[in-house]
Length: 259
Image 1 (tube, rainbow, N blue to C red):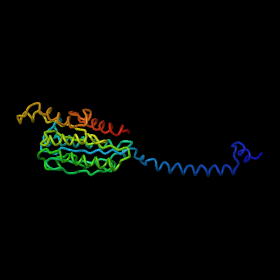
Image 2 (cartoon, rainbow, N blue to C red; image 1 turned 90 degrees about the horizontal axis):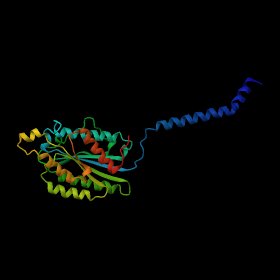
Image 3 (cartoon, helix red, strand yellow; image 1 turned 45 degrees about the vertical axis):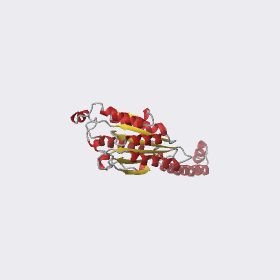
Image 4 (tube, rainbow, N blue to C red; image 1 turned 180 degrees about the vertical axis):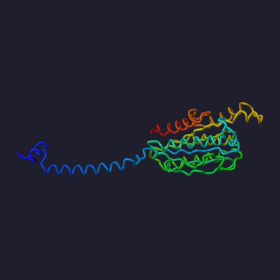
């Protein structure tokens, strides 16, 4: 028996079959390479979640907060951290974001877009750097956010869609009554919710200005009343807890934000 025949018998393949096996292997290898090349393709959208950041840019946000930094800087760090967290999410292509700031006027600093297209490097979310920091009129900004949320939900009708407005402020509203009326309207919109985060003022600043010690608590109560529910409000010194609160608020309407 020849060596060639012995090898053929030992493997169970004839030389012709072996050649076909090699060809098949090459084809499978090519397919595997193509699959590997598409592994980074994002998963299709399984839901549509809009997050609208509404940031207080009034004069009081330029003074130190409970961390010792200005409240505007505290807001910047919180918003930046949450956007970057969403960008790391397994379902990052399901999130749209926008951002506006307010004082006497209100302006858009980030128009609505997919969160993956936001470049946080060099982007300032300190509201006091985008608008003249004066009095605190939140109603126009809330109304604009309400309209944006309604338009988003209408555009995605029939899909799994939600809209969350996140208000970051130190309170002390000059249009409290109108703001409360608007928040009641937001709460009545199916698929929409409002989360509020209170930024307290450094007590030393309050004492220097002769302001009552319970000033922070009074302002926090107003924001708490504005939120969709108590679970959608927080008032804390810890920046990490602020970030976690925002993520919990987003998760409560969209589902878990998975890595």
